[in-house]
Structure formats: C-alpha cells, structure tokens
Image (cartoon, rainbow, N blue to C red; front, side, top):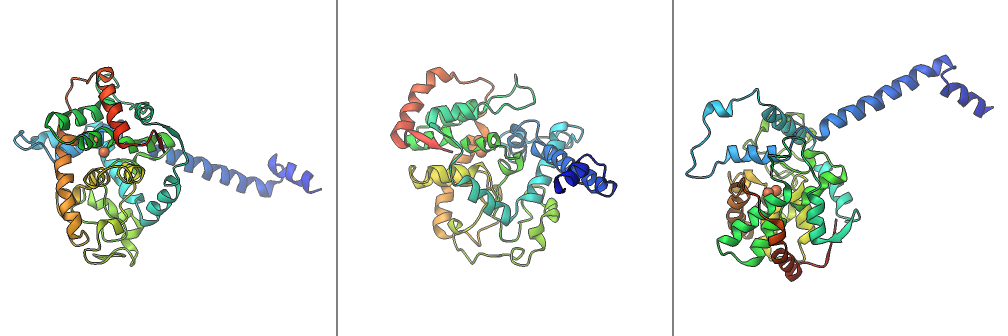
Length: 320
Ligand code: FE
Ligand code: FE
C-alpha cells in the first residue's frame, strides 16, 4: 500500500505532493548552479597572483598608471573582484575548522613527491593556456631564482614546493578556499585586507565571539594559536611540518598573509618569535612575486637536482 502511494507521489499523480517535489528539485538545481558559478570566478588561478603583483609592484619598477589599474572592463579584474567577494563571504571560523577536519586526515592520495608536483600541473587554467606559465614552471622559476642568489638548499626546496597545496583545487575545492590573501579568522578582519568591504557578507562580522580586536585570541598569543583562513599555505604547512627547518615552514604557512608581512596589521597577536621568523617570510616573498619570466625552465634538465633535494629532506611519498 505504502509502495503504491509512493509510486503515485514520484510519478506526480498525487497533486498535493507534486508542488513540494518540484520545489525541492528547483532548490537542488539552483544550489548546484550557484555552487558551480562560485567554484571558479577566476579564469586562471594566476589572475590572483597578477593582482597581488599590481598591489605590490617590484621596488624600482614603474608602478602601474591609474588608468591601467582602472581598466574595469577587463574580465580578469571582474573575476578577481568576484573571487574576493566569495572568499570574504565564506572564509569563516567554522569553514576553517571544517576544512582542517577534512583535509588534515590526508586520506585523499599518496604518491612520490615528484609525481605530486606533476599532478599539480594537471591543474589547467581556462584562460590563454599557451601564454600562461604552468604551475611547475612558476615553482621552478621561484626556486631557481633563490638558488641563483646562493641561499641554502632547504630554501631552494621551499621555493620549489611552496604552492603544492593548490592541489586542493583538484580535490573539488572552490578557488576561494585555495588561493587569495590569507588572514586570521576568529577576530576582527583588518581593514587593510584587500577588498575589505566584502566582509559585510561574512557572518563572523556580526558574531560577538569573533568581531573584536582579539576575538578568541589574546595579546601576542603567537600565530601557532591562530586559525588562518583556509588555503594552500596552511595545507602544505601541515604536510611538511615534520621535515623542514622552521624558517621554511613560516615561508610556506604565511606566504599569502599580506596584511601582516606587508602591512603589519596583526602585530597584536604575533609573538616575538613570529616577528623574528617573519624576516624569512619577507625574504621569500620577492622570489614568489618577482621571479616570473616568460622563458620557461627546462624541466628535464632540472629534475635530477630537485629529486635529490626532495630525497634529502622529505619522505619518499607525500600523503595528500
Ligand atoms: Fe602561493
Ligand atoms: Fe607562488
């Protein structure tokens, strides 16, 4: 009897039930569509890096003219703006805890390190695939620039792997949960964070636990006690924390924390040790931002050197 009734409901013949079912389908479709739109507002992950470069041009280089900055017709700029709208809306304290609970299980994939770097490279951006350097090329250019300046080999290795956490995109995470400037959650959002105005859509802005200067933290409690917005930086830090020297771990964990390393907006929660270690983050940042060159490195020539470096510091395989 129940079976017969359900058949009628599913076939829509019980008029009173048809409307709720249609409504449910509509909600499911809408949610799916909205989520799809919100997955990839950037046509390329590099659009975010390019935007950072415009904000912090290389010292000595002519800054972009106002006209260049105000090219609002550019689809890249619209994409970056939409990206930050989503990032600032959804990067809540609860989002960070949920992502840590999921990804810090490291149960998605396990493979040799070099294979993981090649896996990252399957992340193909939509825009201008011919003109854009792929992920591996950005990593090799960063590392080679560090190496050319005679820095220690662990620093070179850090340059080589620093963006591996972007594999989060390959695990179905939306761009706003992978890249973008990072910032502490659980306390007031600094108004020096780019596109600060979009925090008006973040529920934590209205939560009394989180919207004061210190929020859930205390004076100079140290960044190790602070949850940063979720992204590729924290993820790779958690993967490498037992294997690399501490300065390398700071570079990896805080390389997108521009409101601190460029603007010093969170001195009230950093402790003295963080301040000391941020000198390394400052050292690393120019290599990340300013090492891009249109000449792609020859991967096959460099591979043996980087495989040796990986073998020196890291375990045989990486658990993602
Ligand atoms: Fe990065
Ligand atoms: Fe990078």
